[in-house]
Length: 456
Image 1 (tube, rainbow, N blue to C red):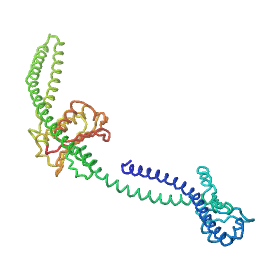
Image 2: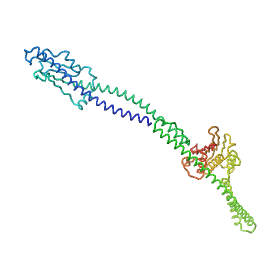
Image 3: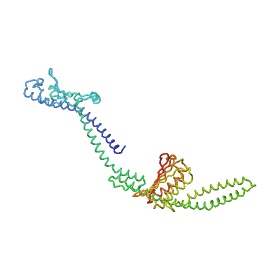
Image 4: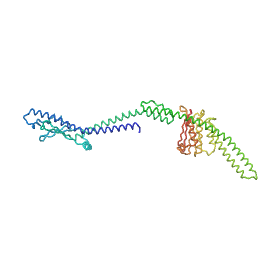
């Protein structure tokens, strides 16, 4: 999941929790606001009746105080204005058939669902009536009793919750949109850092990241730039060291080739000459024919050793590209494999681009790669057809592409993880040249592809 979405989701969760807490508090406050309205209504009506009581007492002093109220009638429009919606007020002692005077309760919020009407009184409790004396100094003046309407209180709480939910949804949508834009803008430089790291994984260590405004991202960018510089320096040092090791190894190979030619070659020639002499002498009449047979077997074994020695000398001596050029040496390499036996698989050579001016380490590396891949395909597989393609890509990416494909089966993953000397050697040469090597499955076999920069 993307980091922007994670941050927005967490922010929305926090907003939802806060709005949930606010909704609970609003429900409690709306439900208890009826109690406050009841107390206020009782107080206002009591004060109004107190003023009426003392006025009647002064104007009609001949009457007994217990007969002053409710004369004149207190049930007037002015008294109705003092009663809050959802509250009923009555005067005690009440006259016969007198009903409470109630404020407007119709249309006070929407009708709540049954579950809400059942849950709210259970958790928040019921409402209590409020009693206020008309006059604290005259107990005989009577009292005002205000009673809240429970249904009106629940309707008012439900109406308040609906309003809160509407506001909550609008706030959540606005917060999600604005937070997404703000977080995406703040994390936009992270994409540039990830792209730079991906380029470094492909071997392009110079990142050249822009300057970031955020201090944390700026520190990460500086660390990535420094890491790229160190990786490039280490890669250059490793390539130089590998090239030097390859030069030393080539010198050793040439020295070994000379020793094999001078020592083993001459001794094998002497053994072959002695075996021929023994065979000729033993072929005369009257001689033991078993000796002649042994001499012929020695001659055959010597011929086999001399053929193996010639193959080893070809691989150990300086490669042909240094003498004939890459194109001619590749043609000779394929022709030499074709001429070994008619039973060999078909080898197709496809040369593309201008290969005439390719020389030096790049030509040597290309030849060694082609030589090793052909050798592995011919010796370790049951291929019927092998394709060797060498292509030069001109332009900014001036490089040499070598691809060897066969239909002899094989496990590409196992071969790629192999630590054999041949594959290890071409890996070292390609790494020293700054190129790349890939081993992938092909139709019926393996495909080995190498890229060698010609500027290396």
